Figure 1: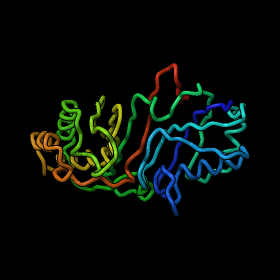
Figure 2: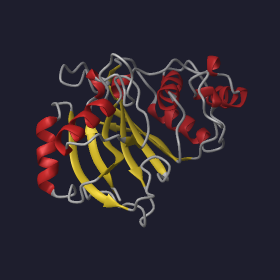
Figure 3: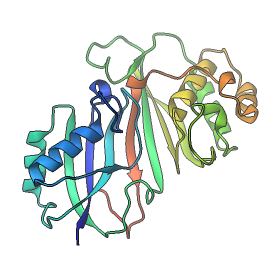
Figure 4: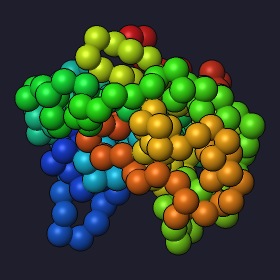
Length: 254
């Protein structure tokens, strides 16, 4: 019987065409599967906790795979794997889990960060949105509070996706100032395709005085993506945390 493992990893999404395998494009899933299959000398398929789009990063990501080998949770194997992975992808830890544990379906919440740089920074151009315009952060935070009053976020979803529902429960949403950066944190039980970037784009319009808080309510209630703000650029978005029930999986400390 094969052993199931959870992998904890991170990646810079700039040079990846997203997480999911696709023809004629470099993806995180493909790179990981190729490295695991090579090192383990067996075909290995990897299932991720979600799908990040082209250019989106993950400071923390979880995936699972099955293998005939039963000692892949040893730190030496993780060290060996990292020598096969490119500079944009790092593996933190591999852990044994129950054969029924699922990286995607067992996740209870996900947390994203979005970074806006108020000052041009050549070292952050791949990992933040450079936006040198006045933004009213207090008003943006007031608009964040509106999100907690709703569960249907069709207005912030990419059109023509194959999901059965556009309902999500948002647990946290706020902006914080960190030096020359603004950092948006949002946590929910699930996210729709393009949802975070659409929310950020809309909140930025609030910060610029282009939208009012009451208009944000109207946008959500209209369930029309065309009324919301433009999607924020991919480079500022990071998947930062994924939570699981303790009996399924406990993430590494730090």
